[in-house]
Image (cartoon, rainbow, N blue to C red; front, top):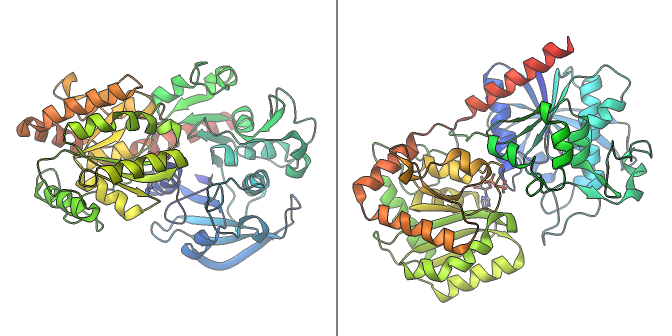
Length: 480
Ligand code: ADP
């Protein structure tokens, strides 16, 4: 089985969030099941520097008139999974993230940058590259949403495609006058095509033209069919519900495992928990917090976007500090969230620390050093930080939504509890959940029991990879 897996980011080449983890973990898990997987990514400078290039490349015929482009053959530095990088200096060679400049403004030519990625995915699917001709095209989120449409337009025999929705909120909406620049015309700009309230929607293209649609948890697969959580696309998704499936993401335990983690102060496991206390002390020291083993230490590692419930956290801060909690936050995003968290850290220097930015190593240290990890999201398609927290024996405090609801069991729901779950999307809900967490924390043997339950959970990629393989096989049987 040959699979072309196209995405806007993949760790360790480049990562801004969960998609980066998934585009590295899933291809590698599929490869270990015997599939031949090739990852397709734009040749951002970081990706070019980190991927192991074979020295071979193929010139592309400037398909969208965006500038000279080529495909670079390479492999992943860790897993060895094959990689193709779409090189186009005018589009990808610039500082910043895959999506915007260093100040967080989206690139004005994102329509072209991701149209070219999608076009390359379709071209390789229809014609092959470096002797690789995929049986399945698996594309991810709006950045690659046009690929199934380009593929449909191609005259050649085409493999079936899967469009995976990692977050329906970000849809890739562009002005209609850009239609021709991305190789589309008025026939595509219809209600049955890419037109969405008078604009072009890359997300809609993926949903409309892929043979199968997946999303990253069962609960989110149901939520996106409802008007209040369907981000305006519930109707279209409802019309395609027979090809929609929720497949829970996995965690890469080669990278996220306290027993093997080189970034943390002391390694530990469910049977040797001693190291966790050392990790807590090291984190308190690094962050300048009071070095108290008895203070419940809360962590948060997140993009600072409305989705992530940062507003809920801000409203709960005074209550959390009054309870004697310490808090370490790591993230960046909306400037007012950054400012509010910075100022809380300034007002409560012994209780709170805020690191604004992106720091992979610190993310591991927070996972290991905190007692509880907060994930108060308003919605969460799957969520990965709570999966890592479970493995690190850091009890996740999550809102009951999307993948959070599917992966954490409240400790008061029975002996199998793994964390703390709350329903109300409000600061009072979070505060009450942490209060319940602290009561548990003050009963060490009960706490340990829940912690061990959490650490025993297996959310490794194997399960998801098997589910994707059976989906691919189903599609191939249909095509035959
Ligand atoms: P999303 O993809 O919506 O941002 P997920 O929970 O699915 O959220 O994935 C977030 C990933 O990004 C995790 O691997 C998390 O550790 C990482 N992450 C988020 N913010 C930061 C940050 N500021 N520094 C380091 N890692 C971060």
